[in-house]
Length: 354
Image (tube, rainbow, N blue to C red; front, side, top):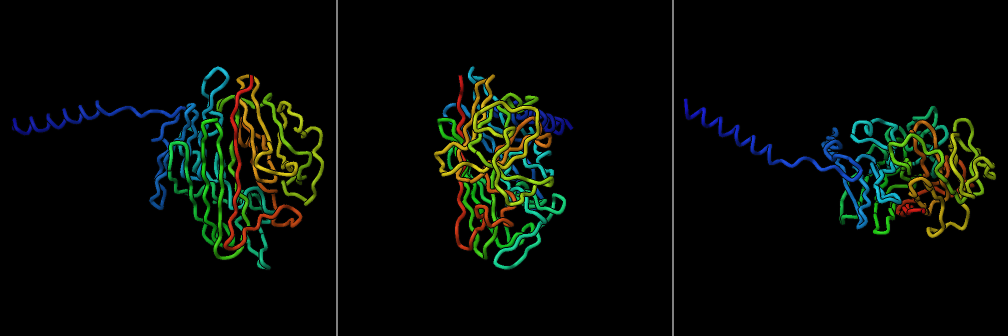
């Protein structure tokens, strides 16, 4: 009997010593705990939180579901770090369909009227999730898909997703690679590459970053100063579907001269001024109070500005193609031809203003 008592006491002591030597989990610079993002889906794939950083201490966190950017920590003019991406500190809210916070949106971001497309004289009925329309790729678009993620360097993540033929009703398959690279000058680069092997399809891919330069927990973005390099925009009807027209930006929506955001709701597709090159600044957002500023550069033809209660106290500046372009041949094309490659780049340069 004494031997049994000694045996169990030894086990208990060992377990106690093991628990005492376990190190507490370390939070990221943004205050996130990776364990809170672990999630096993019904295919046996495990969602994780990945961290990239640069020599200045800037940090970006990304997870597998939707290749989502969960946080971006940048310094203010006093050296304090702020997470400027609206989001959550656990995986659960991100699992809800229709949650696009920080996600790669596709196969066709924005709206397709009637949920129908035609390509090579064949009509395809897409999954509808915005009344009779298809929004951001359908109810289970890329934002809810599981991306395989590799980290070839401390400052880079390569995210891959395979979209099968007929996924959400879209024709043909798509191999997508999204690469996030963080440079030592506090520049975050988004590189998108996609190809299809069966037949032509439509594609419009972007990342839905919801930003608040005052910090993710701030109550408002009002007062932050916006610049958009666009004299024209795409007018939308009450269902946010375009007519095909391109019009001059109304005075109350014009940000060609930088000025402060106010309390109004914005949902505007700006047609970026031409010629469009990656060296030409497309937009900029600045918070005068803490000095944090971000400049946006893109190869895409438009910036979609969204500021409304559905994304909280934040705004999104999505670099993308025009909404519903499959129904408007006068718009820049979004056709991805068989055996061709779609490529796009968007750059966020984070700076400090005095």
